[in-house]
Length: 205
Image (cartoon, rainbow, N blue to C red):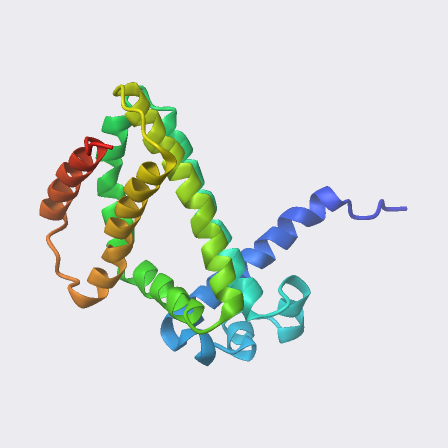
């Protein structure tokens, strides 16, 4: 008698299915927008039935939540990596180039702008986006605190929060610039961003 499939065996298969759905949804959201990308269209793109999608996600908002969670996981890992660097300040400056590359990618930019646009009119998506942003800002603030404390600066929470907002605004703004001006000189912009980050890290409290 063969042994029943164990959860350990089934888990990778389920994760692969979820990833298949997310990839299809990302493609549909980019090309058709949130409202134009129906579950039917996503299922067709994923090559599976709509019922199969509902087995993993209750609705399109749940799919967006998974997409946002995946991005958040990457950003939290990045800030943790920065804090673990020998020179956190220079690590932040160096990684600015990666942030520019990622946020100027037209496919990534189109998706993120679509999600933010939906958040402006859909309270459920707004809550998803804001929770993720709060977690990301908290990790970024800890990274900034690390640099500023090492430099002998004693900042209150409000000042650290504003520094984090300024950094977030710089990189979030690239999403719009990627669409409006896709021919940006990334190398020159990288140098400007690196100088701006150095200046920001030296801002007096």
